[in-house]
Figure 1 (cartoon, rainbow, N blue to C red):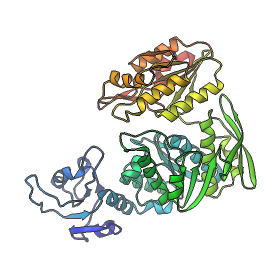
Figure 2: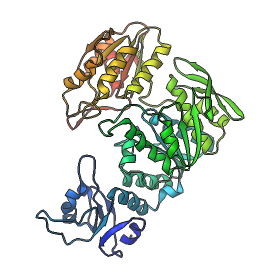
Figure 3: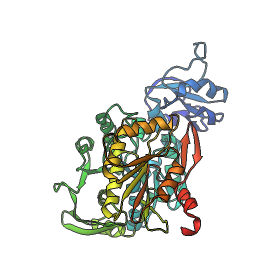
Figure 4: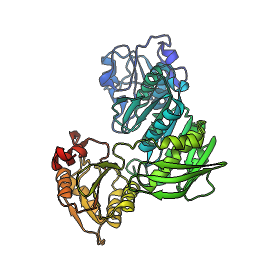
Length: 489
Protein backbone atom coordinates (compact mmCIF):
# COMPACT_ATOMS: atom_id res chain seq x y z
CA UNK A 1 0.00 0.00 0.00
CA UNK A 2 1.28 3.48 -0.80
CA UNK A 3 2.25 5.77 2.08
CA UNK A 4 -0.22 8.42 0.95
CA UNK A 5 -3.13 5.95 1.14
CA UNK A 6 -2.18 4.98 4.69
CA UNK A 7 -1.95 8.60 5.77
CA UNK A 8 -5.07 9.80 3.94
CA UNK A 9 -6.98 10.70 7.13
CA UNK A 10 -3.96 11.77 9.20
CA UNK A 11 -3.26 15.45 9.87
CA UNK A 12 0.35 15.90 8.74
CA UNK A 13 2.52 18.67 10.21
CA UNK A 14 5.56 18.06 8.02
CA UNK A 15 6.36 15.40 5.41
CA UNK A 16 9.91 14.34 4.63
CA UNK A 17 8.86 11.35 2.55
CA UNK A 18 7.35 10.62 -0.86
CA UNK A 19 3.68 9.71 -0.59
CA UNK A 20 4.08 7.25 -3.50
CA UNK A 21 6.49 5.07 -1.49
CA UNK A 22 5.28 1.50 -1.05
CA UNK A 23 4.78 0.28 2.49
CA UNK A 24 4.71 -3.44 3.26
CA UNK A 25 3.44 -3.26 6.83
CA UNK A 26 2.80 -1.15 9.93
CA UNK A 27 4.63 -1.51 13.24
CA UNK A 28 4.81 0.40 16.54
CA UNK A 29 7.26 -1.93 18.33
CA UNK A 30 10.78 -1.68 16.90
CA UNK A 31 11.62 -5.17 18.23
CA UNK A 32 9.08 -6.68 15.82
CA UNK A 33 9.71 -4.42 12.83
CA UNK A 34 10.43 -5.95 9.41
CA UNK A 35 12.23 -4.23 6.47
CA UNK A 36 9.93 -2.03 4.42
CA UNK A 37 7.43 -1.39 7.19
CA UNK A 38 6.14 1.96 8.44
CA UNK A 39 7.28 2.58 12.03
CA UNK A 40 4.95 4.68 14.18
CA UNK A 41 6.73 6.07 17.25
CA UNK A 42 4.13 6.32 20.01
CA UNK A 43 4.58 7.59 23.54
CA UNK A 44 3.66 4.67 25.78
CA UNK A 45 2.81 4.34 29.45
CA UNK A 46 6.31 3.07 30.31
CA UNK A 47 8.45 3.95 27.27
CA UNK A 48 8.62 6.36 24.33
CA UNK A 49 8.80 4.95 20.82
CA UNK A 50 10.80 7.99 19.70
CA UNK A 51 13.76 6.53 21.62
CA UNK A 52 13.74 3.52 19.26
CA UNK A 53 13.70 5.31 15.92
CA UNK A 54 17.39 4.52 15.33
CA UNK A 55 16.66 0.82 15.98
CA UNK A 56 13.78 0.95 13.50
CA UNK A 57 16.00 2.53 10.85
CA UNK A 58 18.74 -0.07 11.33
CA UNK A 59 16.10 -2.76 10.78
CA UNK A 60 15.05 -1.19 7.47
CA UNK A 61 11.97 0.90 8.25
CA UNK A 62 10.58 2.47 5.06
CA UNK A 63 9.35 5.58 6.86
CA UNK A 64 8.93 6.96 10.39
CA UNK A 65 5.75 8.58 11.71
CA UNK A 66 6.62 10.65 14.76
CA UNK A 67 5.92 13.84 16.69
CA UNK A 68 9.41 15.33 16.36
CA UNK A 69 12.06 15.22 13.63
CA UNK A 70 14.23 12.09 13.95
CA UNK A 71 17.70 12.77 15.33
CA UNK A 72 20.80 10.66 15.79
CA UNK A 73 22.32 10.14 19.23
CA UNK A 74 24.55 13.20 18.76
CA UNK A 75 21.57 15.48 18.06
CA UNK A 76 21.96 15.73 14.29
CA UNK A 77 19.02 15.04 11.98
CA UNK A 78 18.82 11.57 10.45
CA UNK A 79 18.46 11.31 6.68
CA UNK A 80 15.38 9.13 6.81
CA UNK A 81 11.90 9.36 5.28
CA UNK A 82 9.66 10.74 7.99
CA UNK A 83 6.23 12.24 8.60
CA UNK A 84 5.65 14.49 11.59
CA UNK A 85 2.19 14.54 13.19
CA UNK A 86 0.73 16.24 16.24
CA UNK A 87 -0.31 12.97 17.87
CA UNK A 88 1.29 9.72 16.78
CA UNK A 89 -1.26 7.67 18.77
CA UNK A 90 -4.05 9.15 16.66
CA UNK A 91 -1.93 8.51 13.57
CA UNK A 92 -1.40 4.86 14.57
CA UNK A 93 -5.15 4.34 15.00
CA UNK A 94 -5.97 5.89 11.61
CA UNK A 95 -3.10 4.19 9.78
CA UNK A 96 -4.03 0.82 11.30
CA UNK A 97 -7.64 1.20 10.19
CA UNK A 98 -6.49 2.03 6.65
CA UNK A 99 -3.99 -0.84 6.52
CA UNK A 100 -6.68 -3.41 7.39
CA UNK A 101 -9.29 -1.95 5.02
CA UNK A 102 -11.44 0.01 7.53
CA UNK A 103 -13.02 -3.08 9.14
CA UNK A 104 -14.76 -1.07 11.90
CA UNK A 105 -16.91 0.65 9.26
CA UNK A 106 -18.33 -2.73 8.20
CA UNK A 107 -19.19 -4.07 11.68
CA UNK A 108 -21.71 -3.16 14.36
CA UNK A 109 -19.48 -2.51 17.36
CA UNK A 110 -20.75 -2.31 20.93
CA UNK A 111 -18.39 -0.71 23.46
CA UNK A 112 -18.80 -1.25 27.20
CA UNK A 113 -17.05 0.97 29.72
CA UNK A 114 -17.17 1.36 33.50
CA UNK A 115 -15.18 0.23 36.53
CA UNK A 116 -17.02 -3.01 37.22
CA UNK A 117 -19.12 -5.35 35.11
CA UNK A 118 -17.47 -4.83 31.71
CA UNK A 119 -16.42 -8.46 31.24
CA UNK A 120 -19.76 -9.91 32.33
CA UNK A 121 -21.81 -7.41 30.31
CA UNK A 122 -19.79 -7.90 27.11
CA UNK A 123 -19.98 -11.69 27.46
CA UNK A 124 -23.73 -11.61 28.05
CA UNK A 125 -24.31 -9.19 25.16
CA UNK A 126 -22.41 -11.60 22.89
CA UNK A 127 -24.55 -14.54 24.01
CA UNK A 128 -27.81 -12.59 23.70
CA UNK A 129 -26.96 -11.28 20.23
CA UNK A 130 -26.07 -14.76 19.03
CA UNK A 131 -29.38 -16.10 20.32
CA UNK A 132 -31.50 -13.19 19.07
CA UNK A 133 -29.89 -12.61 15.67
CA UNK A 134 -28.35 -15.95 14.77
CA UNK A 135 -25.25 -14.02 13.72
CA UNK A 136 -21.64 -14.69 14.59
CA UNK A 137 -20.39 -12.23 17.22
CA UNK A 138 -16.82 -11.27 18.11
CA UNK A 139 -15.61 -10.19 21.54
CA UNK A 140 -12.53 -8.30 22.73
CA UNK A 141 -11.98 -8.10 26.47
CA UNK A 142 -10.18 -8.94 29.69
CA UNK A 143 -10.80 -12.68 29.50
CA UNK A 144 -9.54 -12.90 25.92
CA UNK A 145 -10.77 -12.60 22.35
CA UNK A 146 -13.60 -14.64 20.89
CA UNK A 147 -14.43 -14.96 17.20
CA UNK A 148 -17.68 -16.84 17.40
CA UNK A 149 -16.64 -19.83 19.51
CA UNK A 150 -12.94 -19.60 18.61
CA UNK A 151 -10.87 -18.29 21.51
CA UNK A 152 -7.67 -16.23 21.34
CA UNK A 153 -5.61 -14.91 24.27
CA UNK A 154 -5.52 -11.21 25.20
CA UNK A 155 -2.72 -9.26 26.88
CA UNK A 156 -4.84 -6.35 28.09
CA UNK A 157 -8.51 -5.35 28.41
CA UNK A 158 -8.41 -3.19 25.27
CA UNK A 159 -5.45 -3.90 22.93
CA UNK A 160 -3.40 -1.27 21.09
CA UNK A 161 -5.18 0.24 18.07
CA UNK A 162 -3.19 -1.76 15.50
CA UNK A 163 -4.16 -5.01 17.22
CA UNK A 164 -7.80 -3.92 17.48
CA UNK A 165 -8.08 -3.33 13.75
CA UNK A 166 -6.24 -6.57 12.99
CA UNK A 167 -8.77 -8.45 15.13
CA UNK A 168 -11.72 -6.58 13.61
CA UNK A 169 -10.48 -7.51 10.12
CA UNK A 170 -10.17 -11.16 11.15
CA UNK A 171 -13.65 -11.11 12.68
CA UNK A 172 -15.07 -9.58 9.52
CA UNK A 173 -13.42 -12.27 7.36
CA UNK A 174 -14.85 -14.95 9.65
CA UNK A 175 -18.38 -13.66 9.12
CA UNK A 176 -19.00 -11.65 12.28
CA UNK A 177 -21.75 -9.05 12.06
CA UNK A 178 -21.35 -7.70 15.60
CA UNK A 179 -18.33 -7.12 17.84
CA UNK A 180 -18.59 -6.44 21.57
CA UNK A 181 -15.62 -4.72 23.15
CA UNK A 182 -14.54 -3.77 26.66
CA UNK A 183 -13.30 -0.18 26.51
CA UNK A 184 -11.01 0.70 29.40
CA UNK A 185 -10.15 4.20 30.56
CA UNK A 186 -6.53 3.51 29.57
CA UNK A 187 -7.68 2.71 26.03
CA UNK A 188 -9.71 5.91 25.81
CA UNK A 189 -6.93 8.07 27.27
CA UNK A 190 -4.28 6.45 25.04
CA UNK A 191 -6.58 6.69 21.97
CA UNK A 192 -6.56 2.98 21.19
CA UNK A 193 -10.14 3.19 19.89
CA UNK A 194 -9.76 6.57 18.17
CA UNK A 195 -11.71 6.77 14.92
CA UNK A 196 -14.05 3.87 15.70
CA UNK A 197 -17.74 4.76 15.62
CA UNK A 198 -19.59 2.52 18.06
CA UNK A 199 -23.11 1.39 17.26
CA UNK A 200 -23.84 1.34 21.00
CA UNK A 201 -21.86 2.54 24.01
CA UNK A 202 -22.71 1.13 27.45
CA UNK A 203 -21.87 2.70 30.82
CA UNK A 204 -22.01 0.30 33.78
CA UNK A 205 -20.72 2.26 36.81
CA UNK A 206 -17.76 4.16 38.18
CA UNK A 207 -15.95 3.57 41.46
CA UNK A 208 -12.42 4.05 42.74
CA UNK A 209 -9.80 2.48 40.52
CA UNK A 210 -6.72 3.47 38.50
CA UNK A 211 -5.95 6.45 40.72
CA UNK A 212 -2.31 5.68 39.90
CA UNK A 213 -3.15 6.61 36.29
CA UNK A 214 -5.86 9.26 36.66
CA UNK A 215 -5.35 12.31 38.88
CA UNK A 216 -8.88 12.28 40.30
CA UNK A 217 -12.27 10.60 40.05
CA UNK A 218 -13.44 13.61 38.04
CA UNK A 219 -10.72 13.04 35.45
CA UNK A 220 -11.43 9.28 35.48
CA UNK A 221 -15.11 9.97 34.72
CA UNK A 222 -14.26 12.49 32.02
CA UNK A 223 -11.97 9.99 30.27
CA UNK A 224 -14.67 7.30 30.43
CA UNK A 225 -17.18 9.73 28.91
CA UNK A 226 -15.07 9.99 25.72
CA UNK A 227 -16.65 6.74 24.57
CA UNK A 228 -20.04 8.42 24.30
CA UNK A 229 -18.75 11.08 21.96
CA UNK A 230 -18.08 8.29 19.45
CA UNK A 231 -21.40 6.41 19.64
CA UNK A 232 -24.56 6.31 17.57
CA UNK A 233 -26.52 5.37 20.73
CA UNK A 234 -25.82 4.97 24.44
CA UNK A 235 -27.12 2.82 27.32
CA UNK A 236 -26.40 4.53 30.64
CA UNK A 237 -26.88 3.43 34.24
CA UNK A 238 -28.38 6.55 35.82
CA UNK A 239 -28.26 5.11 39.35
CA UNK A 240 -24.53 5.85 39.25
CA UNK A 241 -23.49 9.27 40.53
CA UNK A 242 -21.21 9.81 37.52
CA UNK A 243 -24.00 9.22 34.99
CA UNK A 244 -24.51 12.98 34.36
CA UNK A 245 -20.98 13.22 32.93
CA UNK A 246 -21.73 10.36 30.54
CA UNK A 247 -25.10 11.86 29.60
CA UNK A 248 -23.50 15.22 28.87
CA UNK A 249 -21.12 13.67 26.33
CA UNK A 250 -23.64 11.27 24.81
CA UNK A 251 -24.91 13.52 22.02
CA UNK A 252 -26.78 10.63 20.46
CA UNK A 253 -29.83 8.46 21.08
CA UNK A 254 -29.83 7.50 24.76
CA UNK A 255 -31.55 4.77 26.73
CA UNK A 256 -31.18 4.91 30.51
CA UNK A 257 -31.52 2.01 32.94
CA UNK A 258 -31.75 1.80 36.73
CA UNK A 259 -33.00 -0.06 39.77
CA UNK A 260 -33.53 2.95 42.05
CA UNK A 261 -34.57 5.69 39.61
CA UNK A 262 -38.07 5.24 38.17
CA UNK A 263 -37.35 8.00 35.62
CA UNK A 264 -35.10 5.60 33.69
CA UNK A 265 -36.26 4.19 30.37
CA UNK A 266 -35.67 0.66 31.66
CA UNK A 267 -36.24 -0.13 35.35
CA UNK A 268 -35.93 -3.33 37.43
CA UNK A 269 -38.97 -4.14 39.58
CA UNK A 270 -39.97 -7.06 41.85
CA UNK A 271 -36.33 -7.91 42.52
CA UNK A 272 -35.60 -11.35 44.01
CA UNK A 273 -32.10 -12.50 44.93
CA UNK A 274 -31.27 -16.22 45.09
CA UNK A 275 -28.13 -18.16 45.91
CA UNK A 276 -27.50 -18.97 42.26
CA UNK A 277 -29.50 -16.39 40.31
CA UNK A 278 -31.46 -13.15 40.19
CA UNK A 279 -35.11 -12.76 39.21
CA UNK A 280 -36.81 -9.44 38.39
CA UNK A 281 -39.21 -7.66 36.05
CA UNK A 282 -37.78 -5.32 33.42
CA UNK A 283 -40.16 -2.40 32.94
CA UNK A 284 -39.94 -0.18 29.88
CA UNK A 285 -42.52 1.86 27.98
CA UNK A 286 -45.24 -0.53 26.91
CA UNK A 287 -43.34 -3.61 28.07
CA UNK A 288 -42.93 -5.67 31.25
CA UNK A 289 -40.78 -8.79 31.04
CA UNK A 290 -39.59 -11.26 33.63
CA UNK A 291 -35.82 -11.71 33.65
CA UNK A 292 -33.93 -14.62 35.21
CA UNK A 293 -30.14 -14.64 35.10
CA UNK A 294 -28.10 -17.45 36.60
CA UNK A 295 -25.52 -15.22 38.30
CA UNK A 296 -26.19 -14.16 41.93
CA UNK A 297 -25.97 -10.65 43.38
CA UNK A 298 -27.60 -7.25 42.99
CA UNK A 299 -24.86 -6.30 40.52
CA UNK A 300 -26.20 -9.03 38.21
CA UNK A 301 -29.46 -7.09 37.89
CA UNK A 302 -27.55 -4.02 36.71
CA UNK A 303 -25.59 -6.19 34.29
CA UNK A 304 -28.80 -7.74 32.92
CA UNK A 305 -30.38 -4.31 32.48
CA UNK A 306 -27.29 -3.11 30.60
CA UNK A 307 -27.56 -6.08 28.25
CA UNK A 308 -31.28 -5.58 27.61
CA UNK A 309 -30.75 -1.84 27.03
CA UNK A 310 -27.95 -2.49 24.52
CA UNK A 311 -30.08 -5.09 22.71
CA UNK A 312 -33.01 -2.67 22.52
CA UNK A 313 -30.77 -0.01 20.97
CA UNK A 314 -29.69 -2.60 18.39
CA UNK A 315 -33.32 -3.18 17.46
CA UNK A 316 -34.20 -6.27 19.52
CA UNK A 317 -37.24 -5.99 21.76
CA UNK A 318 -36.92 -6.43 25.52
CA UNK A 319 -38.98 -9.63 25.57
CA UNK A 320 -36.62 -11.38 23.16
CA UNK A 321 -33.44 -10.37 25.00
CA UNK A 322 -34.99 -11.16 28.40
CA UNK A 323 -35.84 -14.62 27.13
CA UNK A 324 -32.30 -15.08 25.79
CA UNK A 325 -30.77 -14.14 29.17
CA UNK A 326 -32.43 -17.16 30.77
CA UNK A 327 -30.14 -19.46 28.79
CA UNK A 328 -26.93 -17.43 29.24
CA UNK A 329 -24.11 -18.88 31.30
CA UNK A 330 -21.85 -17.11 33.76
CA UNK A 331 -18.38 -15.75 33.14
CA UNK A 332 -15.15 -17.35 34.30
CA UNK A 333 -13.84 -15.62 37.40
CA UNK A 334 -17.01 -13.62 38.05
CA UNK A 335 -18.96 -15.04 41.01
CA UNK A 336 -17.71 -18.41 39.80
CA UNK A 337 -18.69 -21.33 42.02
CA UNK A 338 -15.90 -23.86 42.57
CA UNK A 339 -17.15 -27.31 43.59
CA UNK A 340 -15.62 -28.64 46.81
CA UNK A 341 -17.64 -31.74 47.59
CA UNK A 342 -17.95 -30.34 51.12
CA UNK A 343 -20.56 -28.55 53.20
CA UNK A 344 -19.27 -25.06 52.36
CA UNK A 345 -19.03 -22.98 49.17
CA UNK A 346 -16.10 -21.39 47.34
CA UNK A 347 -16.54 -18.41 45.00
CA UNK A 348 -13.82 -17.04 42.73
CA UNK A 349 -14.32 -13.42 41.74
CA UNK A 350 -12.17 -10.82 39.98
CA UNK A 351 -13.14 -8.12 42.51
CA UNK A 352 -10.09 -5.86 42.72
CA UNK A 353 -11.75 -2.51 43.40
CA UNK A 354 -13.52 -1.34 46.58
CA UNK A 355 -16.96 -1.34 44.95
CA UNK A 356 -16.50 -4.76 43.35
CA UNK A 357 -15.29 -6.25 46.63
CA UNK A 358 -18.31 -4.89 48.48
CA UNK A 359 -20.60 -6.19 45.73
CA UNK A 360 -19.37 -9.78 45.84
CA UNK A 361 -19.33 -9.92 49.66
CA UNK A 362 -22.85 -8.47 49.80
CA UNK A 363 -24.01 -10.98 47.17
CA UNK A 364 -22.60 -13.85 49.23
CA UNK A 365 -24.21 -12.43 52.36
CA UNK A 366 -27.55 -12.62 50.59
CA UNK A 367 -27.52 -16.42 50.35
CA UNK A 368 -25.04 -17.60 52.99
CA UNK A 369 -26.37 -19.58 55.94
CA UNK A 370 -22.98 -19.45 57.62
CA UNK A 371 -20.00 -17.12 57.68
CA UNK A 372 -18.78 -15.06 54.76
CA UNK A 373 -14.99 -15.44 54.66
CA UNK A 374 -13.09 -13.12 52.31
CA UNK A 375 -9.56 -13.84 51.07
CA UNK A 376 -7.97 -11.02 49.10
CA UNK A 377 -4.92 -8.86 48.44
CA UNK A 378 -4.12 -5.81 46.30
CA UNK A 379 -1.95 -5.50 43.21
CA UNK A 380 1.47 -3.91 43.34
CA UNK A 381 2.43 -0.91 41.18
CA UNK A 382 -1.23 0.06 41.05
CA UNK A 383 -3.57 2.47 42.85
CA UNK A 384 -2.33 2.56 46.47
CA UNK A 385 -5.21 4.69 47.69
CA UNK A 386 -7.70 1.85 47.39
CA UNK A 387 -5.75 -0.58 49.60
CA UNK A 388 -6.92 0.66 53.03
CA UNK A 389 -10.40 1.25 51.58
CA UNK A 390 -10.60 -2.39 50.51
CA UNK A 391 -9.31 -3.48 53.90
CA UNK A 392 -12.10 -1.55 55.61
CA UNK A 393 -14.74 -2.93 53.24
CA UNK A 394 -13.56 -6.52 53.72
CA UNK A 395 -13.68 -6.11 57.50
CA UNK A 396 -17.02 -4.29 57.50
CA UNK A 397 -18.92 -6.79 55.35
CA UNK A 398 -17.19 -10.11 56.10
CA UNK A 399 -17.28 -12.37 59.14
CA UNK A 400 -13.62 -13.30 58.75
CA UNK A 401 -10.87 -11.92 56.51
CA UNK A 402 -7.70 -13.53 55.16
CA UNK A 403 -5.26 -10.90 53.87
CA UNK A 404 -2.74 -12.22 51.35
CA UNK A 405 -0.92 -11.30 48.12
CA UNK A 406 -2.40 -10.62 44.70
CA UNK A 407 0.08 -9.57 41.98
CA UNK A 408 2.79 -7.82 44.02
CA UNK A 409 4.80 -6.96 40.89
CA UNK A 410 7.82 -4.85 41.93
CA UNK A 411 6.54 -4.00 45.41
CA UNK A 412 7.19 -5.92 48.62
CA UNK A 413 4.11 -8.05 49.37
CA UNK A 414 4.36 -7.26 53.08
CA UNK A 415 4.31 -3.51 52.38
CA UNK A 416 1.10 -3.86 50.34
CA UNK A 417 -0.48 -5.96 53.09
CA UNK A 418 0.41 -3.35 55.73
CA UNK A 419 -1.41 -0.69 53.70
CA UNK A 420 -4.48 -2.95 53.53
CA UNK A 421 -4.33 -3.56 57.28
CA UNK A 422 -4.29 0.19 57.95
CA UNK A 423 -7.90 0.28 56.76
CA UNK A 424 -8.85 -2.51 59.14
CA UNK A 425 -7.64 -0.68 62.26
CA UNK A 426 -10.46 -0.22 64.75
CA UNK A 427 -12.68 -2.93 63.26
CA UNK A 428 -13.79 -5.92 65.29
CA UNK A 429 -13.74 -8.46 62.46
CA UNK A 430 -11.20 -11.24 63.07
CA UNK A 431 -8.53 -11.71 60.43
CA UNK A 432 -5.30 -13.50 59.63
CA UNK A 433 -2.38 -12.52 57.40
CA UNK A 434 -0.82 -15.22 55.20
CA UNK A 435 1.40 -13.61 52.60
CA UNK A 436 1.74 -16.66 50.33
CA UNK A 437 -1.56 -16.89 48.43
CA UNK A 438 -1.39 -20.65 47.92
CA UNK A 439 -0.84 -21.23 51.65
CA UNK A 440 -3.63 -18.74 52.41
CA UNK A 441 -6.09 -20.72 50.27
CA UNK A 442 -5.00 -23.98 51.89
CA UNK A 443 -5.58 -22.44 55.34
CA UNK A 444 -9.00 -21.14 54.31
CA UNK A 445 -10.08 -24.58 53.05
CA UNK A 446 -8.72 -26.36 56.13
CA UNK A 447 -10.57 -23.99 58.46
CA UNK A 448 -13.88 -23.72 56.59
CA UNK A 449 -16.96 -24.33 58.70
CA UNK A 450 -20.31 -25.82 57.60
CA UNK A 451 -22.35 -23.42 55.42
CA UNK A 452 -19.46 -20.95 55.04
CA UNK A 453 -19.07 -19.02 51.79
CA UNK A 454 -15.36 -18.57 51.06
CA UNK A 455 -14.64 -15.77 48.57
CA UNK A 456 -11.30 -15.83 46.74
CA UNK A 457 -11.25 -12.24 45.49
CA UNK A 458 -8.97 -10.43 43.07
CA UNK A 459 -7.62 -13.04 40.65
CA UNK A 460 -10.81 -14.15 38.90
CA UNK A 461 -9.99 -15.46 35.42
CA UNK A 462 -6.25 -14.86 35.84
CA UNK A 463 -4.18 -18.03 35.94
CA UNK A 464 -0.98 -16.37 37.14
CA UNK A 465 0.66 -14.18 39.75
CA UNK A 466 3.17 -11.47 38.88
CA UNK A 467 6.34 -11.15 40.97
CA UNK A 468 8.65 -8.43 39.74
CA UNK A 469 8.19 -8.62 35.96
CA UNK A 470 7.73 -12.40 35.97
CA UNK A 471 4.41 -14.18 35.48
CA UNK A 472 4.13 -17.42 37.43
CA UNK A 473 1.37 -19.93 36.76
CA UNK A 474 -1.27 -19.79 39.49
CA UNK A 475 -4.85 -20.91 38.89
CA UNK A 476 -7.02 -20.83 41.99
CA UNK A 477 -9.25 -23.59 40.64
CA UNK A 478 -6.20 -25.85 40.45
CA UNK A 479 -5.06 -24.78 43.90
CA UNK A 480 -8.43 -25.71 45.41
CA UNK A 481 -8.49 -29.02 43.50
CA UNK A 482 -4.98 -30.06 44.45
CA UNK A 483 -5.59 -29.36 48.13
CA UNK A 484 -8.94 -31.08 48.34
CA UNK A 485 -7.96 -33.92 46.04
CA UNK A 486 -9.07 -34.20 42.41
CA UNK A 487 -11.51 -37.00 43.16
CA UNK A 488 -13.66 -34.64 45.20
CA UNK A 489 -14.20 -32.20 42.32
